Image (cartoon, rainbow, N blue to C red; front, side):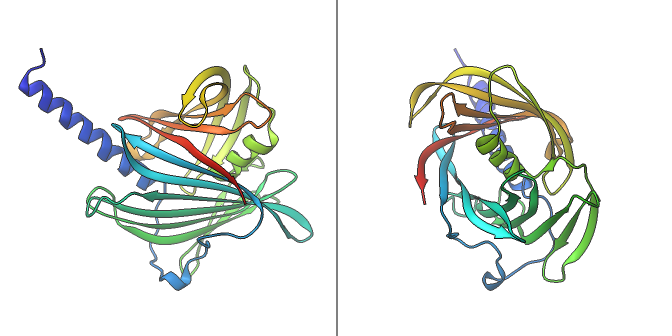
Length: 274
């Protein structure tokens, strides 16, 4: 039998997990200092171009709390070189004063190598459970000079950060794994990931598993998994996992973050061609 105090402790722990999850997702956006108006936003709400769109929902305790989308768009070029543009958004569902989130990201990558050209973050969030942030940042990758140039806000305050020749941002990493890598069980895939805050050396390991989803039911999948420190939690280590269907489509059906305070899973809800 569970005591009354035990029930209270369980409810308190659940609230800690929910609040901590929201704080972590807010912290994924990094830090910025300059506010912008709607007219100054850099990433369009509905980007043009053909491609594929993945729509995800994240739930905690059976309640939907976040919607996320990732669009891989082709058909653009710069300097005669073909490019992919990977758009992502994370939006909160209505929670009143607790939190509101409308964060968007854009990665421009070379189509042949999947090397990132630019990474843009637009952060718009506030509420009782998340830190208020309203800013944009642009990161331009300069591989010949082994650096990334960060620009913040209207004044374009510049900062140069050294990087290695094989560095990716989070979205170019996602596109590379989905479009380029031949993922098989038993692989190890090293990657340098720059998320706009820190350069992290990561190794993704692959294994075959059966997973369940509302969209596909139970299917064979290949899971890519890596450990990584989370600066939000004092660099305590957690894990990131991405499950791809083990077939020709290689559909990313689940994305899971294992945080020091618990798990959050984004499940594929629908997939569209645009």
